[in-house]
Image (cartoon, rainbow, N blue to C red; front, top):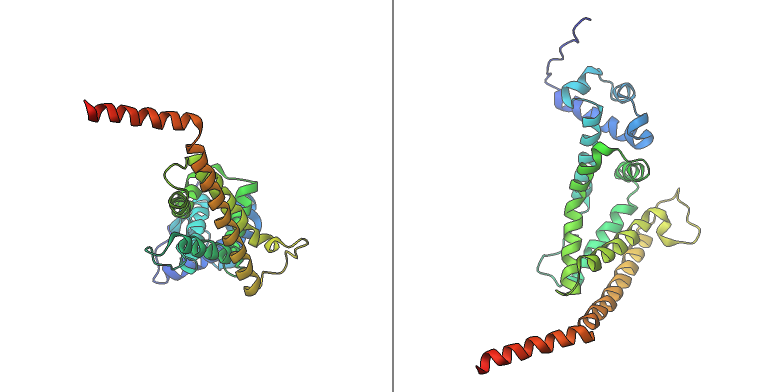
Amino acid sequence: MPASPVVKPRRDGSATKRKLLDAACCVFAEKGFRDATVGEICRRAGANPALISYHFGDKASLYEAVWRHCVRRARQYYPVDGGVDPGAPVEERLRAHIETFVRCMADSGELSHLHRLNLMESTSPNAFMSDVIKELRQPHTTYLWDLLREMLGPQATDRDIALCETTVVGQCRMARAGGGTRNPDLTKPLSPEDTATLAEHIADFTLAGIAALRARIDRRRRTPAARRKTRAKAATETQRITR
């Protein structure tokens, strides 16, 4: 079998790589990883198929590069902190996080590729992408968990926080489903006004829910068993001091 032709780097290599990446974003978003072909990607990019191997290695590596590119752009447009100072009150930081999350989900422009990739991975996941996607989502998860832990207090369990995170994320993702309208027209993106209204509603709803959960956590701490434990601890401390 004749050896594969050696593809030498060219001065316009970075431009070609970007064309391949842009074309791959479109094709993977339209067809998913399994049905997308290297030939189709190269045809749209106007590039030699051998350049996929040169710049990315293989189809799976190109798919990962597409994910990283899309997430990088999302964070550029919609930073996880919403641009709010880290010293701002926690309620303000949570509102900003929710607003930027909703705006990102409602973005029907360049980020529509990322939304399609997310949907396809949710319905037909590729095992080799599991750790990569978890890594890419980690900054968002960590930031939200830190906010929720601060608001729920030190007595909150990881399960308390996980349930809150699921609720917040689920509400924000409604921006991709017509913003919670009863009969959404999924072919039309949310208007800026509707996006702002939805973000404000989610923030209000979330803050009220967190306040209620914080009160429940405080009550949980004051159960009879917890009170007995507190009294026993206090008695032990009193004995230690009076000895």
